[in-house]
Length: 173
Image (cartoon, rainbow, N blue to C red; front, top):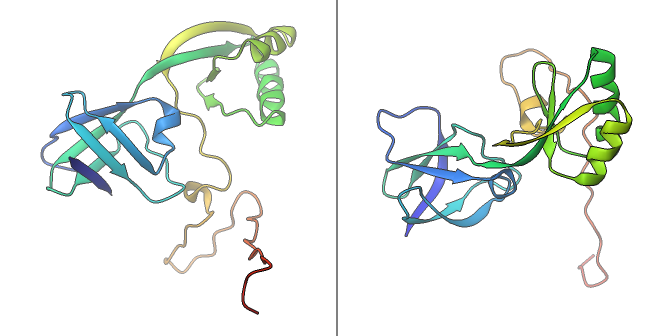
């Protein structure tokens, strides 16, 4: 079985495609099948997310392109930027992952959220579409867990929580 374990920036040749919904692209350990049907194991760094177009190198040197699968989503449109901002606020307040587009939002299909958004005046339509939610303020993209070596100070968009060691009764002192 092919093991995909390293992200690469570019490749002269693409040897296969791995089409996955977002919930599987969030996993760091995964057994899946390429579009060709070949089984693969995906082993990535914990906490990383595979994005549409990412390239993964296998243990045999082959390169596979990741593709975001179409999934059941809602597209959220509003008649004003303020209305869309209100919807984004209420989705964030519920810790709902959202994809931000140019004048629209996309969320996973959820009838309760659909009713809430309609109550806020949004036009909510079902779509079968790739889901690419925002990374979040703590992702490496925005400074969390990412260190710059260019001599300039970079401040993350939000404070990064410190990881605390959890003391368990059986731990040596």
